[in-house]
Length: 156
Image (cartoon, rainbow, N blue to C red; front, side):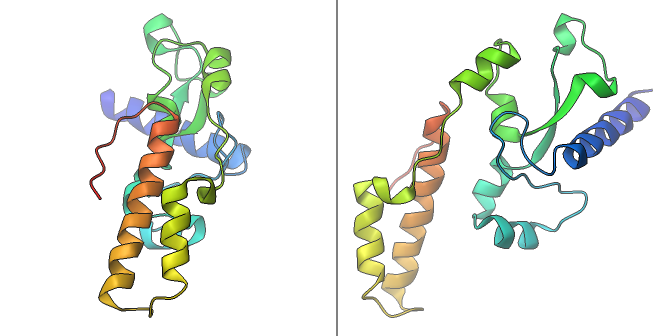
């Protein structure tokens, strides 16, 4: 029974993903559907790291939570980023949509501006270039997570 239930939820998520044009129900940004696209292809398409990709994975979101009597019918399941879905907590759909971020450009963070400026003069493939790219990716992951209330520990 549980296996059939899980298969139904996966089917509903995939239907929602298609119906929504691959965009998250909450933030209207592109998602990754792991059943149809490889991690490598999704990382290239979305321009994200493997860590960030996990946050952008398509998940099944029950509009009326199962704990509140919501079922697995087509009208109750939408596709949402893992991070948007899991950060909803006890909020209603409307309350949650109101709390989500509008992603600011990366270059508004002075630390990222400094890294970008340094990358412009560093040779590609050098040890320093690799180190700076690692810092850039860590800051962006932290920035995205921080905007929706996740506390990631980033050491630079």
